[in-house]
Image (tube, rainbow, N blue to C red; front, side, top):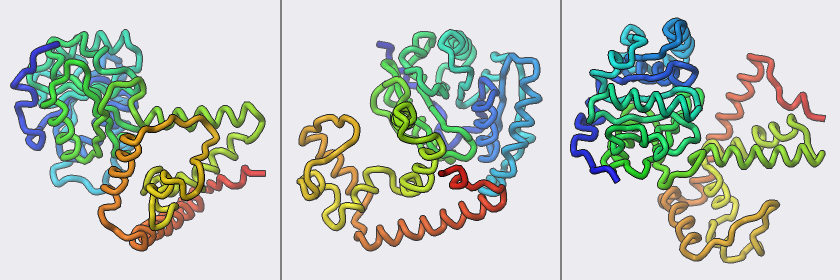
Amino acid sequence: MADTNDSVGIIAPQAVKQVGIVGTGTIGSAWAAHFLARGLDVIATDPHPDAEKKLRIAVDKAWPSLEQLGLANEASRDRLRFTPAIDEALKDTDFIQESTPEQEAIKDKVMADISRAAPPHVVIASSTSGIVPTRLQAQCKHPERMIVGHPFNPVYLIPLVEVVGGKHTAPETIHWAMEFYQHWGKTPLHCRAETPGHLANRLQDAIGGEMMNLIAEGIATASDLDAALTAGPGLRWALLGSFMTGHMAAGEGGLREVFNGKFGEIHSYIQYPDLNEEAIEGILEETQLQVAGRSLKDMEQMRDEFLVGLLKLRAEIEAKYGFDQSRFLK
């Protein structure tokens, strides 16, 4: 295992001034727009001959949405620079976000190039949606400063970033990255173990896989299933997630009553694992942390206010764009 480099993240996360973007496709350009909107300098690099043109078009396209959210006082698209030379792009950066195509051979080569060009203390984050960081660290001169920082599209609007450390990642790097993303407008989630697909994509894949099963069995159509999500649990999940939704549905006793058998044996249409007592207690403790002492009445009021606002917004957007998902239902 690589020795921990005491200079990892030597600059404070809040003091970062310049971000290096490697790869300027859909994800890289969206990262550039996000960091520019936060008032940072961005220098991007990509070998494609049309990369700079496409990058600036993508940033311009994202900018009106970012303006609606609220720009930092120092935000400016003029703070974006581009060079096809990776050494030039990374020599003075304070943080690097790699967003090249999701192919291991490409990422291996790019990670080696980044590791060679970047100052040894600078944290390197990969936007990979499924490759584990230990694989990518094999190409790094200083693997202790390399992580996965996986965003969700559109990166300039969706706040989640999954932070994943590899076998050689220093704990200080994880801590630094979590602070960095949070300070600069993201919602970082520390994935505590490496697993292909990280966390959120695995949840998406589980839902997507069951949707394919239902279609293959002739039980539902694609339109049926999209509507089942967007007009049903997806609305609540947007605020509460799954465990909190279950907690509230169980009434005053919450999830503990469910696990204690209040509604009979827990039933599922797919196979559930047998959870031990420690795992169950962990779920209950985490749920109570989210409840944070609020009464069920207060939680229901919060949920209802959110849903009313969301349903009004949805109706406005549907009317504006002529999009009515229910028209496809038979």
